Amino acid sequence: MEPNANLIKRLYYKHQIIRMGSFFLDPRCYHYSKLKIFLANLLNKKYSETENSIHIKKAMEWLLRSYAITKTGSSAGYSFHNSWMDPYPETTGYIIETFYDSGQYFLDYFGDRDVSGLYRTCAHDMGKWLLEIQLVEGGFPGGTFSSEKILTPNVFNTGQILLGLLRCYSETGDACFLESGIKAGDWLAEVQNPDGTWTKYTYEGEGRSYHARVSWPLLELFKVTKNESYRDTAIANLDWVSKNFDKNGWCEFSNFFDKTTTLTHTFAYTLRGLLESGVILSRQDYIDTVTFTAEKIMKSYEIRKYDLLPALFDKSWNSVANYSCLTGCAQISLILSKIYLLTDDIRFFNTALKINSALKQTQILSGSNQNILGGIQGSYPIYGGYMPMIYPNWAAKFFVDALLSEENIMNSMGDNK
Image 1: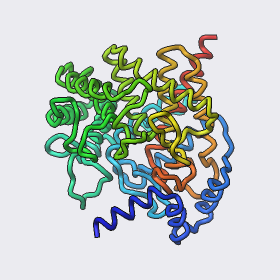
Image 2: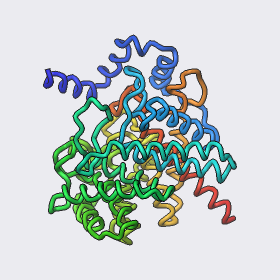
Image 3: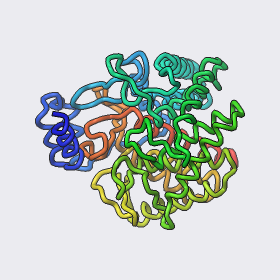
Image 4: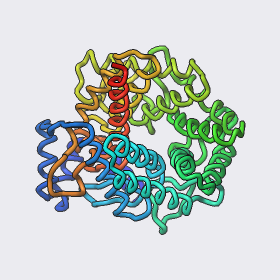
């Protein structure tokens, strides 16, 4: 049964007609709000765009709901087929940062202490839950969480959770978060290969360039503890990742299983990890690599007059997908904004603004279905190949991050006038 199940799953993600058919064959999809979204996406009808603060508020309310549903971590997302999913430790880890950042945003710009306090409390509570599910060896479990599952540690997930633990420690001063982070960091260092890759406790069983986003949290841990083993572990991986970039800005092993294309989501993981690490280490070579590649993406976006970035690119930066990964769009926008701050090259921020505008037009701001309101789809159209028929929590997280970055930059520009 398992080989057949895997075959059906591969066919589902590969063929759009099968994904579309699954919508109409499932009675749970026959809800007015779901049908309306499906048809609007089919006809490429977008929604109204308004001030960033409204979009951020609605997305955060959706993320708050994803937490309230589980009362532990943030639900992995809302599925047209299966309703709310189990809590997802990996994304809960980095969503903690977004809750803290949003709380500060609403306090600084609107003086809303109640909302700010609510987000901070939720971030702290999610952090406490992560402490409870840390495995004995120090890693954190992969996939969504259920007490009925056999839990095995995962390298990438542990790295993302480490970011949340360190943020909780920074905000609260509670040593239990740092102690947990140290256990996680020790485990990541222990299971790394001599060449800097991680192949055990990974989904693919081989090194992946997007593990640069595991190295970044290790460097954040080094900043706090001054333990050089964390820095050395990170650099070993980052140097390996750097070698995977070619002269065209393409990076091998930056998708999940497909080695011929790159997904904007996982490629952005690669770029962000390398960029943040470059800043921490003052490694201009890392920063230059990301900047060069980001310029390739930016030029592709501008020359081909994309609205939303295509989900997949080949090695020549040609689109090989008829849908967009909205998570990847938000992540790329955030990277472009960060490069603008490092280089003062306004082109990067201009492209980020365009992507953010297109993303805002995919978000539903009014309606009766609270499970959808304010969330961000995995794919546009919703029957695309990345998280089809699902509103993932990480899509909303990176959407908020991108808009918060835009807000901070625009406010800074205003201060400089």
